[in-house]
Length: 258
Length: 365
Image 1 (tube, rainbow over the protein chains, first blue to last red):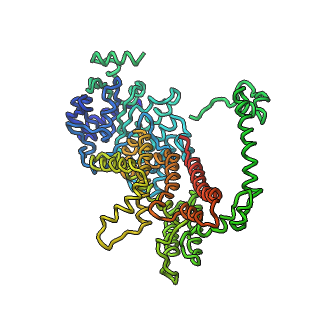
Image 2 (image 1 turned 45 degrees about the vertical axis):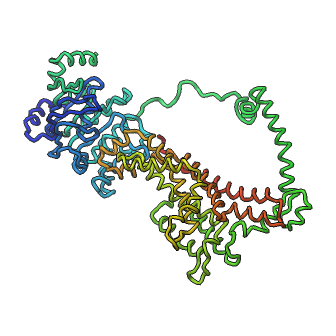
Image 3 (image 1 turned 60 degrees about the horizontal axis):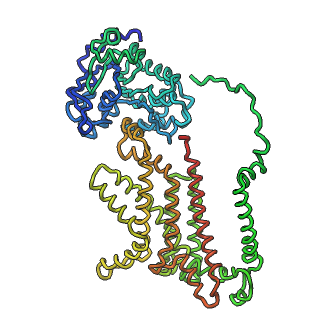
C-alpha cells in the first residue's frame, strides 16, 4: 500500500492502456448522463471515482462491460472495441469482473456453485478444476468454510467477499467495483476493504466507485471526481485530497470528510 | 472476522403464564376469546351435531355396499352398491370388457411413474428415458395392434385412462409452452412480443368450452377431404393451448419479481441470454410461482371433464351414463361422491406435492 506512489511511476508510462475511452457520450432518453468522457487506464492502475449521486460515476463503469450502452465515442478494452457485436461483448465480459453494491449473488445456488457457474459455462472449464480454483479464491477471501452454504445464510460482508471471489474466478484483467461497501453495515466495511487492498497489492487493475476516502488515499493511483456527467477533476490522491483545484471538488470533499 | 457477540443474554429466560399455553390456552385464544366468538363456536358445534350424525348414519350405518338396485330402493341409507356393480364401466368406459386389464396396467404404470418422479433424488437423465419407455409401453397397451394385442380404436377409450391421459399430457406440455410464451412476452423483439401478447390475450379471452368446440367442429372443416385428426388429440391440443396461456401469465409474474441485479450479475459474468434464463432467472422465478402454477394445473385437471361436450367419455361422463341405467336410477349422489373422491385425491396430491417442493427448494432468501 505504502508503495502506491512508487507504483504510479511503473504504470503511468505504459503506452498500451488496458481501457481507452474517448469522447464517449451517453443519454437516458433526453437526459445527457455522460458528457465527453476521455479516460485511459493503464495495466495495474487503480482508480477511485467519487462524486455526488446522479453524477454518472456508476453509469461510467457500467459502460465498460456493456451493462449500459454508450451512444457516441469509443470504448476499447484490452484491444477490443465495444460495439453491438455480441462476440466482442462476451469477450470483454470475460476480461472484466464486476462487483455490485447489492452483491447480486445467485440465491438459489450454493456459494461454491455461485463461483463455478461462470468458469464452467462461459470459460468451459471442467467442473473439478473450476471447483478447485473456486476454493482457492474462497480461501483468499477467508470464507472457504462457507462453501456449501447458500448466500441467504451469510452476512452482508461475507456475501460481498463471495461476490469478489466470484468475479476473480473468471480470471479477469480488470475489476470494476460499483460502491462495494455502501450497502454494508459499518462493522463489515473493513473486511471487504481488506480483501480489496490485498487484491490491489497483487497488481490488479481496479476501477472503484466509492466514497471510502481512506481506501482511496492509501490504494489509488488516481482519484477522480465526477459531477453532472463529467470528470471534473483528477489527480493523485495526495494532491486530490490536500489541494483540490475545483470549487465543486472542494465542496464535495468538505461534505464527506467531516 | 466472525461474529464475536456473547452467547448468553443478560437476563434469564422464564416460562410464559400457564393459561396461555397448552390445550386450555389454545381454546381460549382461538375459540372463546370474546363473547361473539364464543357464540359462533357454540353455533358451529350445534350445526355439527345436527349434520354429522345423520350423514354418518346415511353413509355408513344404513348403507348397502354389495346389493342390487332393487334392494337399495328399500333401504334408508346410501346405495354404494352402484359403484362396485358399475365400477368397470366408470373406470374404463367402452373399452372392450375382456381387454380392460390393459388400461388397468397402463394406469398402474402411470401412477407409479408419477410417484417415482416426485422425489428430487430421482431427477436424473435416466428418469427421462424411463418416462419415454413407460409411455411407449402404455401406448402399446392402450392401442394394441402389436405383439398379439387386439387393436382398440381410440374412440373406445374412456373413463379414468382418458382423464389421466388428457391431464398428464396436457399439463406436461402446457408448462414448457407457457414458459416460452412468458419469455416471448418479455422479448425485446417487437414481433415476437406482440405475437405472444395476442396469443395469450386471445386464449384467455375465450372459455375452454369454445376452444374444444372449435377443435372438434370448426377445425375439421379446414382439413382437406379424407384427412381427419383424432378426436382425443384435438381435445388434447385445445387443453394444452388453453392452459399454456394461463401458465404464461403466472410465469411472467415470477419473471417480473426478479431483481435487475440478477440479470446484471449473470451478464457481468459473461453468461448469454439462454444461459442466464436457464441457470439464473427461471430456477428462481419458477420457484416463486409454484403456488399459483399448481392452482392452474389443478383447475386444468378438473377442466378436462369439459371434454364431455365433444362426446368424449371421460371419468365424469362414464359415471353420468350409468345413472341412465333403469336399475340404478336415483343414486346419483353416491356415484358423484365416488368420482369426486377420485378427483379430490388427485388434486390434493398435487397441492401437497407443491408444498413439499416449495419447502425443499427454499434456500433462505
